[in-house]
Length: 86
Image (tube, rainbow, N blue to C red; front, top):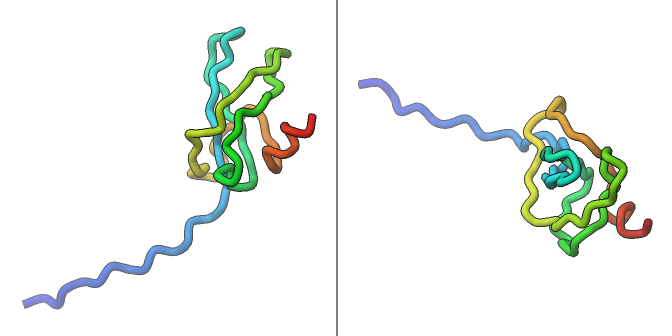
């Protein structure tokens, strides 16, 4: 009888930041905002300067972890505080 196999311990996933998706009504496309810090600390709406030239009011929740380093995004900030202070 074969010995039962043990699952390998899952390594901590690499931290590629967080993604907040929002719709650009001007161009009719879905945009992705990459944030380096966890946005769970403050989920108040933010004003995001979009690539279309307009500023969009974005609800921070829901958000998710980026799955890979090469996952595409449209806009990048280190922290949501950068958008709130402007």
